[in-house]
Length: 288
Image 1 (spheres, helix red, strand yellow):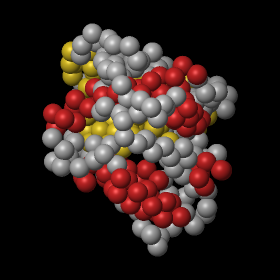
Image 2 (spheres, one colour; image 1 turned 180 degrees about the horizontal axis):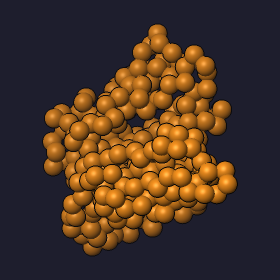
Image 3 (cartoon, one colour; image 1 turned 180 degrees about the vertical axis):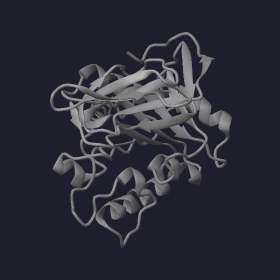
Image 4 (tube, helix red, strand yellow; image 1 turned 30 degrees about the vertical axis):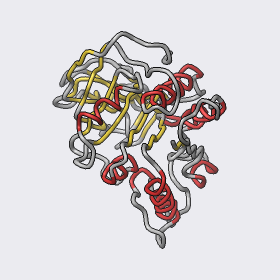
C-alpha cells in the first residue's frame, strides 16, 4: 500500500498511518508493506511532482520506470521491482491534493491477466459506492495499470483533498483499506459492502479557455448532463467572461478545483461518464 505518489496528497499518508498503527500482528494474516511516501522529492517540496528542473515528471505517469532515467523514473523502477517481487495486491492511496476535492471512488483498469469477475468483486470490497471500472486503460503508465498486467490486482483509492485535511476523509480512506484487507483475508472479519454501487467507465478533465477567477457551480458527486453549467470564470473586475459546461456524455462530477483563480487551461473539473447502477448488499460494519 503506498501513499504520496503525488507530494501534496497528504490525506492518503495520514490514512495509511492510521491503518498501520491499528494493525495487530497477532491477528494479521500475511504481510502489509506500507510505503508512506512513495515520492520523497515531491513530498519534501510539498508539490505534486518532483521539483527538480531536469525532472518534473509525474510518478503516476512514469511506470515501469527506468533505473538509469530521471529521478522520478528511478523511483518508479524501484517500486516496480519491489511490488513485482512480493505483492499479491497493490493499493495506491490518492486525494485531490491541496487544490482539488475528489469524490471518493475506487479506480481499477481491467486486464486479461486477472479475471474480470474477480476484479469487480475485489473492487466492491472497499465498501466505497463509486467504482471507476476502466476498460480503456486511460492511465497506461500509472502503477495501478502497470502492476495488474503482472497478475497483481491493483487499485487506486481516491478520497477528498483540499486544505485543511478533513479527518472524516482520512477516516473513510483508512476504513476502506481495512475493509479491503478483510476482503482478501489479511484481517479478520467481513468486508464492508455498499448498499448500491455506481459504476462509471469514462472520464474527462475539463479545462478553461479564459484565465481568471473560478466560481464552481457543482460539487463532487453531483449528477449532470451535457451542457450543464460546471462553473464560471470572471475577469479581474468581477465580470463573467466564460461559462464552463459539462461535455458530451458527462453524468457525474468526480472532482472540483478549489483554488480561486487559474490561467487558461487549468484542470478545473473532472467528470465521469458511462454510468450504471448495481445493487450491493446490506451494509456491514467497518466503513464510516
